[in-house]
Image (cartoon, rainbow, N blue to C red; front, side):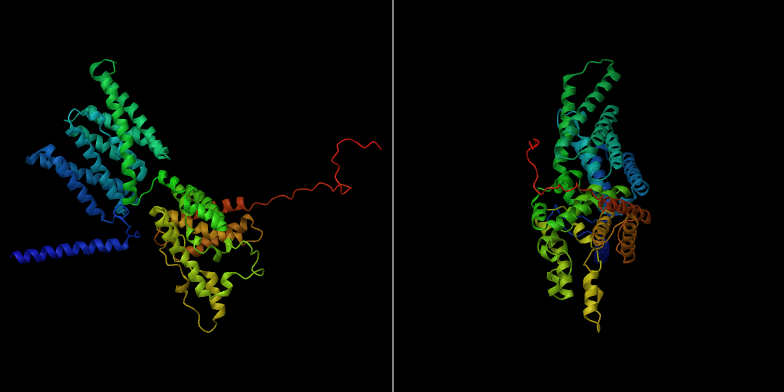
Length: 510
């Protein structure tokens, strides 16, 4: 009997492991390099059940072990899970199949409850100083502000529930979290988070003062209340500074703070690109501007697009001379033989494709975030290197080479941002070769490139719509027409009668 139970339990575990492995294989994300750089792929149902179970055991000592209390606690957790599932489904559908976003949501709720519990355990610690706003900051920067509002409401209710259904604590926690959430929307540096703590402090103090007037009818403000409000603001500002780097790396999320730091051209990798591959650097500036404007047009992450395209071609630093934009002495194909004219087209395609692998290696060596490094392989996807494939066909008339050997290794784009990066890169390169780039000709070129990528299946794994592609075409056409605008021919002054210019302004005495 015991052995049969063990066999059944073993089969159940094997089935669960097989299911988890199958889900992980379908995920576009790869495993990271270290523990905090490792990307997490736990199925969403397991994440939800695990978070509910941990929350159950945290709240169990406070509720009690009586059947009535256990039923109430289970009902509360069941309602909470159902509410978040429905909310994700209807308001944040992009998170429904994002196991990392769901996992991060559960972790943030558990951290908030732990902060409340720690505040209750510490002797003489006021519940008004519990830094619920720190969770609101983390969720706003890493996930979504509407989700931050919902989590803030849940944590405020739990704080009041754990403190004998205190209305005052619920109100203070809600308003302090709301202040943190609203103040951190424009955060661009880590120092800006300190100013968020200041806003949390004065909002907390104002709320405590209002509650004091409501209960006691006295407008007098106690010094101890000001101290707890300042402590709340200090903790709210300091805890995200400690949590954000770990959570960003572990859950493959990136904040505007990190993006602006990574996009600084004083970083060694971007300075090398500026000096060692100036043509690629100029191309990078153009495509990043194109991508940023297109991302704003469809509501994607424009800052991520811009910074991601800064790094999309850093692999060309290894062999910059093999790329046409860095061959400064070559003005036309007939002037001077380039490196690729001396080697076989299949070898040339391997050299071109190697800049993806080299770029990923440079990104890892320089600690480029994974969200930015994804632009390196995904901006090419599995596209065909048409130029060298056509050259190979011309050289070998009897046996055509397989097109697979002339395709980039991938993966295909998995986000709207990398789709924009792929199209911006192709459009900018093709527009350079266009003679007399008028608005209509540029639009035809952009539409042709977008259609070819779509037919080639490069967008199969990305959540991009036809409406998004239409807006991207409009944005690219407008941006390119501004870059290649027609200039007027400036008139020249008539040449002086004498070849020697008069320098003495005084008239001649003759």
